[in-house]
Image 1 (cartoon, rainbow over the protein chains, first blue to last red):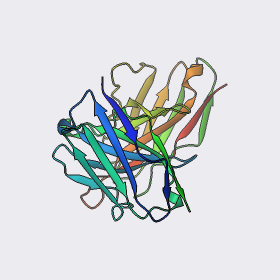
Image 2 (cartoon, each protein chain N blue to C red):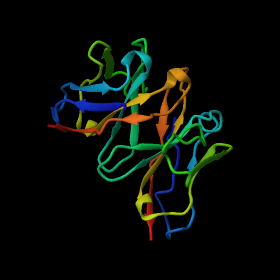
Image 3 (tube, each protein chain N blue to C red):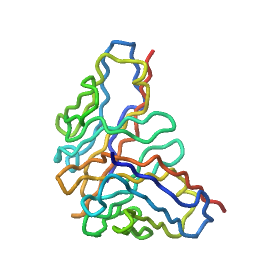
Image 4 (cartoon, chains in turn yellow, cyan):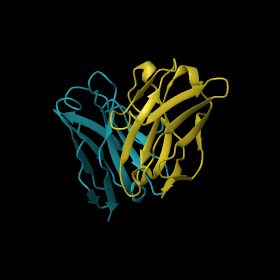
Length: 120
Length: 113
């Protein structure tokens, strides 16, 4: 049974860096692509980016200049950093599995999400 | 790249069928069959219902079906049930300048009357 769990601070100050961790169980980090997706309060979903099964990253052009993703295969974790945050970055952040290596372009397992608020 | 367009809300009575549209463009839905649909209940994370336009993951009810015509994808819920009340999102693979990109629709709130 694949499970994902986000962790990190629930409050970040404006202009600082948002750092999140996703811990995966039931699947190997090395065998799949892993994504971050966010949902602003009362709004829809926005794909942020992924780290693939070789550690290569790909980001949404709208966030590319401020985001960095990485992984630690030994710990079964992958990470996201979002730099220079503003109030517009307040959202629930989800981590999700993307089985792109097998040709599937969808998100089949999601974490429960973590609300991150940006304060001034 | 623009997000696919979905109606804000759709409603139906128990037992009826409803269809949610997801209108994209020639560069995403019109070209790729990488369309997926997600159900999100309040306080929960999205759950995939459909992928590759019409494929259902194991465990998803056959009452959910997907289709595509041109650059518009659709999700049909047959035999509407009270537990189908949720927000439904479509998602399309929409590569941009040779980089991968996924775009979600704005979501459609389904109400069971």
